[in-house]
Length: 574
Ligand SMILES: Nc1ncnc2c1ncn2[C@@H]1O[C@H](COP(=O)(O)OP(=O)(O)O)[C@@H](O)[C@H]1O
Ligand SMILES: [Mg+2]
Image (cartoon, rainbow, N blue to C red; front, side):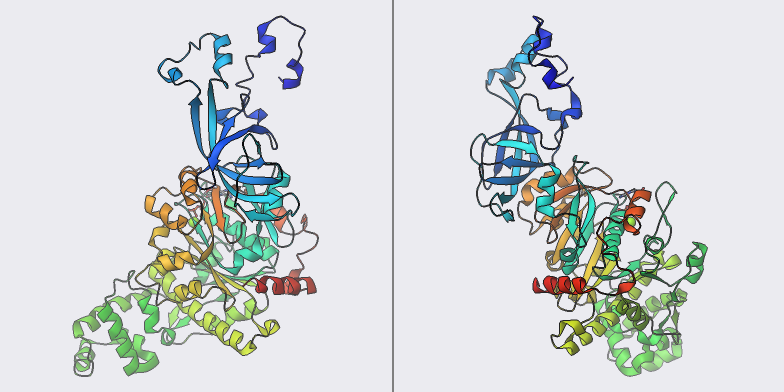
């Protein structure tokens, strides 16, 4: 029943004046712009207390929801961080009124007994300036608190345009959308975190689709579980489209396992082989935890390489016991370590992509595609289950590509038009690459730490962020976090985020799927989103025909003047 119908009923029935269904009218009443209550207390550091109006259905409010306090000259954007029941009269706690009497219930509800919410102010927009700013003050008493409207959300996150991509709706504001600033997203490294099965891979695919569609950066995706390239199976066995199907002209599929790629109905643009001679001791250092290598084994690797040069690893694998005996006098390394190292590197023999002589230089090949503005998905096929293969290959290729980037950037001598295009490298199981014992030596640690100096950033996907080196974590510009339930993981993703206290409650209460908090560099304030559903509607929206972005998606990787202008803008932000 609409509220207006009951304003002046010509009736002497109490029920007409105080309709019984008003309090349980349900979420139908919760709409954008709807008033929830008024500010009654709080502070800048602790957040604001809001007394809910009598009509507000407390059960429909959820932590993480996005509300706006309309002050006299400013709008304050806040997130609900707690919900409480309160009373004016302490006696009510010990002696609750008899609620079997509907009349009494109506009187108490919302007056003597009421709900309050605690909200954390995160941003303000001054009505004169129109620009979102950090909060340095709070609204005064009794300012109205409302559910954010689409316009409020757009004022903060930006409208959908060639650099802003719709990633989902703010929590319980289904009719609005959060448009993520993709330029800022790729400008620093990005982390997508969450327990297994929370939708990390789906969400990552959505982010990548936005980046590819709007030509924000080239991508190199180390696709461990065949989640990105071609036909992706979801939990229920139905197939979702891979990036190559959405952007056939913009994606090249590379594979380590041609057979597996064919079996899935895709055709690889390039089959990757790596020569034994290309593997350096530093690539092994990355495998320290995975292969259970000791420091002395790694030292032995360096020594062997010095002695045997490029052929060291193959020679070590092939070495017979007599050869090992002969080595005894020539090496300073302890022979037990050399033998242990040999046993471990012999596992590489199972990897058919490792060959005495690679057919082609795969790192160069990847770079060729990237220079043309295409993105490369590297499928691991059956090697996806061998963590050591994943780490070895990702590390080797990234090391090579990064050094080519460094060379190109340095050769450009500050001339931005001669610099290589922005490259975003996606890795899954990131903590295996970035755990504190190796993050210092590895190329991924280096990339995360050097920010965007060489136009390379990382998109790391991980379910155990507490396993990632703290210093690397602090360099992750934008963190996208689905549900985490381990205390240490929650603490890890929240370090260095202001207002983290309130977010902890929100983070621990996300839905188990398709919900995430986005915080950091790409968003002006943390926001909880219900991730866009990856379905036919999404395919249509990104694959061009139904594009609403005003023609930004010029195909073929050719930059327009507008693209270049944006590049210059975003570089200035560095
Ligand atoms: N945005 C989304 N659109 C459609 N389905 C989703 C979405 N997010 C998650 N899902 C569902 O949840 C399942 C798990 O998601 P997935 O990305 O594989 O999780 P994770 O990588 O975190 O283990 C998917 O198989 C899919 O059914
Ligand atoms: Mg996954």
